[in-house]
Amino acid sequence: MKEKALLIGIRRPGSTVSEMEASLSELIRLVDTSGGVVAGIAKQELKTINPATFLGTGKVENIKINIGDAQMIVVDDELTPAQNRNLSEAFGIKVLDRTAVILDIFARRARTREGELQVELAQLNYRASRLTGRGLSFSQQAGYIGNRGPGETKLEVDRRRIRERISFLRGELKKVRMHRELHRRKRENVPIPVVSLIGYTNSGKSTLMNALTSANVLVEDKLFATLDPTVRRMRLKSGRIILVADTVGFIRKLPHQLVESFRATFEEVENSDLLVHVIDASDSMCARHVEVVDAVLGELGLSDKPCLKVFNKCDCKNIYVKDGKDGVFISASKKTGMDGLAKKLDDMLVIGFKHARLNLPHSNGAILSEIYRVGRVNFVKHGKQSIAVNAELPEKLVGRYKKYSI
Image 1: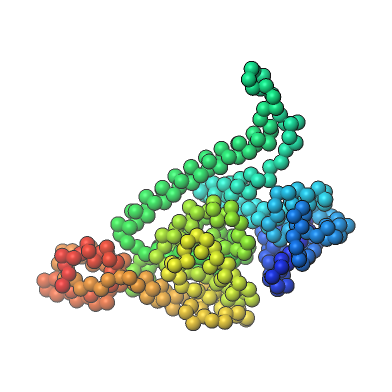
Image 2 (image 1 turned 180 degrees about the vertical axis):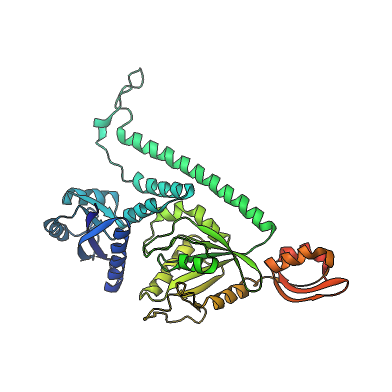
């Protein structure tokens, strides 16, 4: 049985009506993804934020009258613990903010051990400041000399347990990072480029991943359909092998707890050679979505990473791209534009490569195979005594094969 939710759209000072409507439409999809059903919608334009209830006093009274059969209230913004508590008491039903709904979706979507650890850490960081108690009525008496008195309250015990659990989870995620680092070092011995797909949630990253690599990643018309990252091999037309990583989607008002908790996942992005920013060109808010992704990348310290913009869903009737001269236009679902995208990837991944002319003995055919796999071969000639190769290679390989250099 789906819970009925009354949604409250918020227009903060400085934002437009269209931005409020877009955010509210997104909240409707978030509630649907989390298993709820929208029973009604209210809106408020805030000139100032009420520190006690976030909403204006008149709006709170109006909503109390019009709650109907709603079982919970969802506010399209982040509430302080006090605001959340005061609104719950005023309405007499559960009150959630946007952050709580997103965390709930992440908890539903987590499939791997790593994903579950990251979600639990985010939830505990969110809930830690929202614990409330009843003071001395929860006191635990200590019955020996020197320790009589109110003791540790139930609230303090809960907070201590949460702190201990957070510390444990951070330790476990540190082990995950070490495991990832071990795999990365193994990969660096054979320098295969890593390309990470990033973008706003529901922009089509997983569909593109499947189109490029036949990865069979779950694809749904829901927000955050893919949570745990997937890495697959892809062979470019030049013969080079690259690794393509699908990552969690971004969203406006992305909770800080998620950015912090998912750093282990974002490390895959951090160690990528190229970011592919997938943009839903059929969404009228695509320019705003690009700004959101850029802001999150800035928060993660990844703004300087090489990035290719890919405008997806270009088979749709309306396209809202004002300036796409530096990007690639595709339809991942129809697999159109894939050749152009693959060529662009090949071209961008040789930036920083070194030009090399090698003379390889016939007995070293394995070296030529590796050059085809990780570099870009411009010319090969098989002679009687040796193989002449003209290629662009990662700097590490140029040094490794220096003795064959012409």
